[in-house]
Image (cartoon, helix red, strand yellow):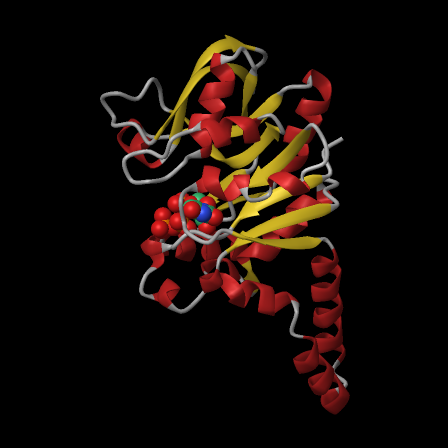
Length: 271
Ligand code: UTP
C-alpha cells in the first residue's frame, strides 16, 4: 500500500516573479482555494496518510498557514463565525498529516526528495509536484491502482507539442501494456526538440521506489549544480527496474507560470 507522499515546495518560483519574491506560489488561490489544498485533497482521496512537505526558509509562510492557531483562536472567540470555524477545522485536519522537512538550498527536485529519506517507511511512495494540477480525475488514485496491480513504479504522462518538449521530462516507450500504460525505455530531463526521443512528457505525479534514495546519493549535480529526480529514475531503469508511463484521464493545468495560473482559475471556475 502507498501511504506516504513527498511534495517538494522549496524551489525559487522564478517564473512567477515578482510575486514569488515575497509570496509562496502554492498558497495562491485557484478559484478561491490555495493550490496546495487541491494537491492535499487529491492525496487524501487517494488514501495517503502522511505528506512530507519539503520547504525552505523562504517558504516558511506555508508552515505558518497550517500553524496559525493563536490567530484563529482570537478571531473565533471574537466573531464566532461558523465559516471561520470550519476553515480552521479544515486546516487542523490537513496539518495532522503533514511533516515539514527543510531543503537549505534549491539544488533540484532530486535533492529535495532526498531530504525526506529517513521518513519513508514503505517500499514505494508517491511524489507530487504542486505546480501540476490535474482535475476531473484523481490521477494519484489511478496511479496507485495500477501500481497495486503491476507492483511497479509509475509516472503520470501525456503527449505534448513537439515544440514544447524542452519544458518536461520526456520518455520513449519500450513496450505497450494497454492504451494508457507503457513500459518506459528511457527518460531525459528537458531535452531540445532535436534530441527529444518522443513527445511523451512526464507530469508531476510519481510512484517511486525507496531504492531511489541510494541513486540520488550517488548522482553528481548537473552543470547548473542541481540533482534531478529524472536522472535517478534513468539510473534505476539502467539497473532493469521497470517504470510505467501512465497517460492519465484528468485535465492537466500548469500553475507554475502566470499564464497557466490564470488559465487554471478559469478552468476550475467552469467546473
Ligand atoms: P521547478 O523547478 O519546476 O519549479 O520545480 P520552481 O523551482 O518552483 O519554479 P521556477 O522554475 O523557478 O519558476 C518543481 C517543483 O520542485 C520544487 C519546486 O518548489 C516545485 O514544486 N523544487 C525544485 C524543490 O523543492 N527544490 C528544488 O531545489 C527545486
